[in-house]
Image 1 (tube, rainbow, N blue to C red):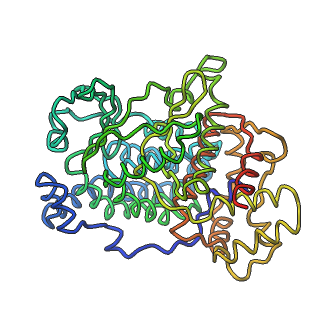
Image 2: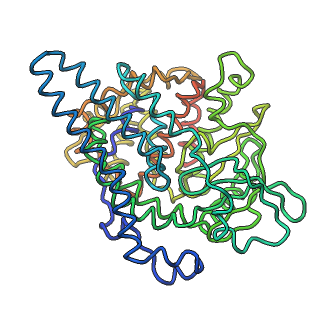
Image 3: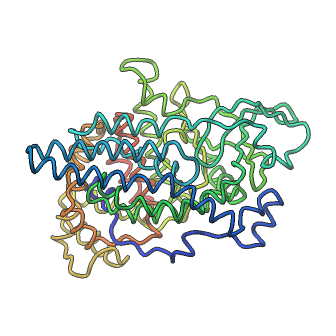
Length: 474
């Protein structure tokens, strides 16, 4: 049930193509200053679209060629299964290589997909893991001199280290010193990235067919559409700063979660407190029995608690569950959360997920009926789905719910992902479970957190955390 809910995205009602592309108004562009206003010109956008399509568009052509030649060759020499797996692995490698080499929306999509690396079929895990891991490494930074237009307006006396500490798809982070002597993190948006993202909104649609070949039955076009819908929001640093302050206030009374204070921001820069905690990326890659590996369980528990409590605590979700966005203190006492660009209002998914999971685990018929009614009332189920069919659609391995704690692992997630990799099973679920676009960010937050627990191989009290979700809502 856990994996089915996570990976079968259902039928989504998305915005129109013009809304998806997200062109900014003249008023919005003027507020961002003269250095950004040129991004909106149709000529510049057209050039960028052609350039991005030349990078992205080569993937489906090459993949279709491989698929065609593989079909002919397998008909002559046999071994169709092996050849299909080889073609699929090569397509995945090419897909992620291109996504990983591009800033903007393409790289962001690649990073989002890389979280689900544990769900890759066992026979393809080697090539996939190598390709996917590249997307969790830092994107090469650009020189700070090229960021001067974005840094315009930074208060006098602030010192920014010219060497970046992290480079991402939409911007990069530098260590700095505030004018009062405090150590700060300076997040700087890449100049011109808005135009690039709008071009990606068009170009990424060319990836739909190949993504559905690489991830069979995944409803990849729904993933791309939902991803594009949220990308434009992540360019709004004013909104991101407001979101971070909102989360910091809500979590201020809890020592286990730390949200760095936003000290100052502009439309292209966010300055926050500096954190010396350890990135979850380092914990994931740590050797067994090392000091860092001892932080796995605590990191996973805090991550899930943060994700599950956000809807009830403040009515919002942090929708970017990437290992670089979470940092654990060296003693495991606290988890620092970064990057509040992908934030949205909750739509009830976390609570309804918890209700269904607990009902299916307990076998409580009355609880299952209540969960079914709530899902039906939200419009998330086809009218033909009765309580019995509801249970069949969502039920998978219930091991995570049987004990006080459960040790998540890559192998466990892989073993539970078979329905995702079965096109017929996924298509059936997608036609009956209808999750609207409003719920998909919350869906991504929870699924990403569980996937990160699998990468961490963390032992966490999932059942207790889900019970808290239900009790706190009453």
